[in-house]
Length: 417
Ligand code: DOR
Ligand code: ZN
Image 1 (cartoon, rainbow, N blue to C red):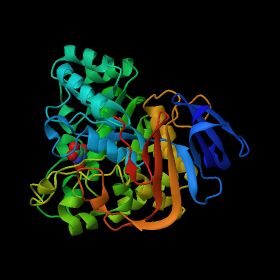
Image 2: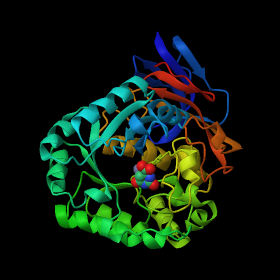
Image 3: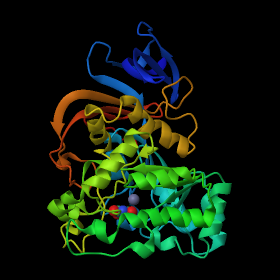
Image 4: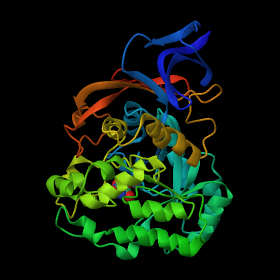
């Protein structure tokens, strides 16, 4: 007897088919025809209902679950509940916590909280440490996805060694693509794109090219905002992701929403956004990530100059990206590639990103077609605001299955931790 039997539409081998998926011990036991029958503990029968689609689980390679001393913004329980509600089965968590994850002791503590509280699968990045001796132990940890390089690390005397070590250990190097020498600030909402210009992104790619050569596979430029960045990074063999807010918003939203539209890199003018859309449509973008960056409401209500940057995104990433399918900018197959298959491949996740026999049974069940509006008051995240408030979307997450366990179903997070 299987643990779960799902019946209905499945994204399988590049197209949508009607069929049956069986799950046992956290693994996809088989993908069968519609008529296949097997007894199971849980039967999810969507064979006669319209609009449901089972896709491989969404993998978000850039989130901030915070925790430790920043738990007032978000912690591993609330952040991973947001992930489950957003259809995300695995998160890769960023190290700019307080204290930052740049030493083995802090890493141990962070992994302990993730283990205790995170209800989806997880990995964590580490920051560049102050001593090279620390890099080895940080990067040897199994749950470490790789190294995250922030603007303040570009000139670290051990950056080169840390990057090489990470690549040697077949871990990813994720770069925040803003060269520190190109960054200034402004008090005027709507204008940050001039103070943290596109040039900062291009200089970031140029810097890594100069330091590490013309073939930098294993380096990933995250939350890029332009066509040009995608072309230049990809030409070097690097990979790239962008986020829904860079594709669907522009600097006029920063002007209108102030702090809620404040994010690094900043929202760009329309012409740059149009270029980014072309990059997405033509396959120059490898992945979509959320860069879920929660802050407290009090922090986001400060003056524009004094509020921290960041937009919460785990619960909106998939519905928002789906609006591009509705507008025929990308296809369902692109969604699976951008949000499931490619992030799994880039993170080196074994047997993830496809619905296939023998693969990890982490999957996302969507309900498509019914329009609803994004309501941040319903977020599981502690950050109950978004520039996308009242945005109309037509993709609802119906269920999230992580390694054969249902962690979200019909509006409810099921935390069996
Ligand atoms: O806007 C941002 N917020 N960009 C980042 O790179 C960091 C993030 C955060 O941690 O809040
Ligand atoms: Zn981030």
